[in-house]
Length: 267
Image (cartoon, rainbow, N blue to C red; front, side, top):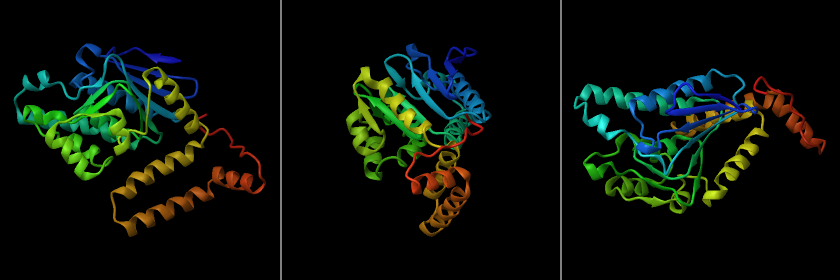
């Protein structure tokens, strides 16, 4: 595994299968999204985007917490609206970078994910959580409505469920997060890595090109009306169908054999 130790706040490793593994590494501060952590995440995601061989991203964390949101001490030290606007804009760039990546992003959630940390989980394409994890958007407890986290949260769970979490600050368990659609699956803590690897293996067995087209279309169609969404989807399926990976896949189905996909630029 090729590790990048340039920033101790965020460990970045790329394995032999071109999976980028980003690990939040500030356990003493509960992996808060400080200015420095956001900068490290943005730099790492930019590297992933520039890697034509990338296949997937796993975001994990060290310590008891996955991520406790923004660094409130750092924020309190800069009581200036321009500073806050720049900070939240920086966080938004990170979240949008996750969305714009061609490859799937999996959150490996081992512990507490609150406020912008919950937003980070919600922004990932997939999430696997330990039974010990918990989730909340509790900024309201300090008089701060979690406005930016609400954007990702409300695109994962039903509006009234999201509003209850945002207005009360109440936390939900990993099991409840799964039932509401915030995470894909919940497993015992000692099975978390295996569950992530099993999900990764299923993704890596699929053609990168089809996953990339699908991810882009999936999010674009969510933001438009139904008729326009169908137009986008129809065009994407047509482009996918004429691509050689689909041609081989369909031919293999007809011939009742496993598909033989050529190694892509990503392999």
